Length: 474
Image 1 (cartoon, one colour):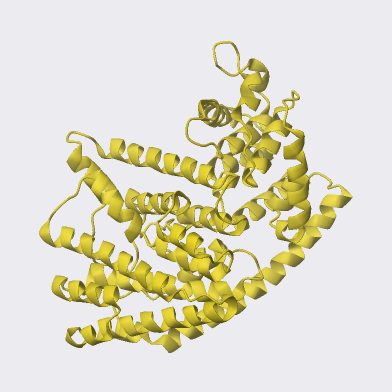
Image 2 (image 1 turned 90 degrees about the vertical axis):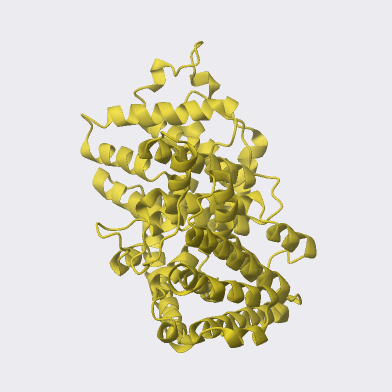
């Protein structure tokens, strides 16, 4: 039932009961009982909640040569769940690496000759693994699979479906209200008029916030998080499209020193942008200080300085024609992705454990944040993410790889990128397991930003991200 509740996206209403039940299952210990589907499901549910369950639980389905026993090769339900469980693997888990490879291959084989609903279930799982997919899409997928199967639902499932339907209506209304406030804020801010070439995508920016912080009670935090997200995009465009290198250097120095006097020599659009940045940072800082008694101004300003310095490095590379090696590119690219800045704001807005030590840990760009940043940076660089209003050009990891490893093909470079994304996910999975220095709310926010990346970089044939597509994610 826990899996159904989570699949329908209504687990927030049963949070305490789910945590208590899974904790009890974890304490009892997980043993292989011959039912692959049940064991893999429990493994996935426990790891999703941060409980470390050893991969050795699956060794009973391996033969003496390390391959998978014939008895599991036609167990479609078991194979699907084992595939889903394998997506929570961490570094060094060879059994789960093998399970991922085997189930992916075997399930593709089993697609042929299957009933339509089972074939669709397999294809959906392979294309959108539950662990790596945002809540809204998993609930839509689960509901559609129930309808396709055409089976009579037990009474308890019918009750949960009614709850999910009501919840969906309420969430839609909540989202519309938040979007209305976001559009109003963006219009009143006036940056669209002063920075004409910069992207004006309030729908996209608030979609990020909606996916990162999914608790319906966090409306205020989502609205506040959208503001720095919007400026990440605007400032990125200033560095990529608008600014001359000398101006960008001065702008970066202004942000680094938070020096209003230094604005005098800069063009109006840069002055207006910094003033908006200062206003938003002050507004968030004062709100947190009043609510929690701690002023995050220094930490927030420092994160903006780090982002601008990373943008400036890329601008200098482009202007000089310099192509860095892959290691140098990624060291800077993890920062220029904006993920660290966004997650620092998210952490502060959540208002949990606002201690000096925890904030300093977040400032150090820990693995739970840097792995999500790696995923975003590399997804962007796969070439599927050319934004609709960007005329500027910056380098990509693929380009750096081809330059560093002479004779490599584009396909080889893209395969290498996919492998790096897979390793980043393994690290993120590890960082979210107990003991974790951060709250479950923040851990899930880091997972959510990584889950959102493939959706936000899925473009149409013209490499645009239509508003209709964004609305479908709500």
